[in-house]
Image (cartoon, rainbow, N blue to C red; front, side, top):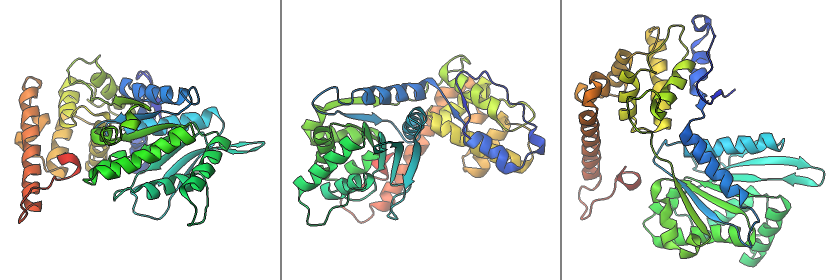
Length: 371
């Protein structure tokens, strides 16, 4: 069961000393804090959904941000919210292809006249995203089965009927940045044409979720820009020692959910400031480091999370040198520590790019947009 907390006003009374490690880790691993950042992302998605059939065409919008910024979490929370509100169920489909997660997630609502599918999330796989392949994913999501010989018009009409009949308001494409990483403008243009079909034929709202360069789709196909084209950037939390600022409140909330009987120090500036620095202020990254450090502490028999435990974890499990370990620095050195981390990360990426481009005339980018 996912635990949620708005303002960190709940105390956890569990006796963790008598619990097994899996239960302890699950408590923090499945916890989601309703932070201002997550709330704003969800508000944006709700706003997009509210535009359903208020105009002759649907809209195409973008929710973008860096890795582990909380984009998919916001989408998943909206999916659960819609399912709860409409008394529906969340159904995931795995297609057995190369995708790293479920290919399709839908909210299914049973009504007296048939099934409704108010929201659908489609995971965009890596690889050349041709118009036909992407459109086929959408057809599969709505159980539209047509012969291979079906023309585009036949597929378009069948899809339009299903979108209307299943009362679909929002289609989300997750990891849409994969479309922009093929080195060809044509790929982004073709994908944008699928979004266009959904907005124009089905009059549904379309949300593209991904890294910041996902918005290149608008550059490749100007019609997308003028079908709404709204963009919400998920920004990192400001790194400050103020315990009442977003970072301090977030870490205070997490601190109350830690599976230790003894109080931890996640709510103190000497822990949450270096943690914010190491994770670039992104909530998803902070949550991961806290979860992994919690597992490390349980394995080592530590009674709580302290600045020393975090410093040890980074050294032992993430191979972070003492010179780059923010938990070994004082808060007054935060800017210097942040600079050192950025430079060290860039140096590792440069070395990797040189290895990959050895023997080539032009250097290739390492990873997604060199990040």
